[in-house]
Length: 55
Image (cartoon, rainbow, N blue to C red):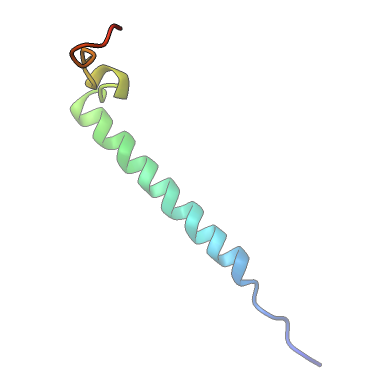
């Protein structure tokens, strides 16, 4: 009788989920230590239009 084949896709998905969870926990831990990160919109200042062009 043949043996059951391992489900490599399931194992890979579980490994990816564990890695993602660990990364999120690390991000939250850093966020708690250093305060909130500024939003991407707040970081980029408004640049004036090039000369000769109207906004």
